[in-house]
Length: 129
Image (cartoon, rainbow, N blue to C red):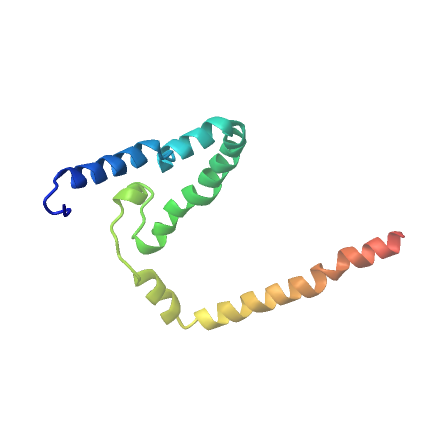
């Protein structure tokens, strides 16, 4: 007899495949594994909470105020209700004839601050020693 004439051969193969599938150990899904990991290591995540709160309060919350540079800010209207003007403030700043002078003064003051401010504590510490 050939396999084409005997319908039981196909059924037998299906039964063998089903038996092998039922014997195979299935790994738990990703969500289950992550949940088990959180349950096992919850103390580590509890220690992370203060750091996450610090990051949110001191690094992400101040970014909300950055939009003042792009708005016609009014203290009475607040940040959210002030009209959006885009890069107009930056065009005014860079187009001002005093901008280069102010930039040069800022760089000079910073340079002198480094020259005199950085070695002075070292010199004073050496004098005390």
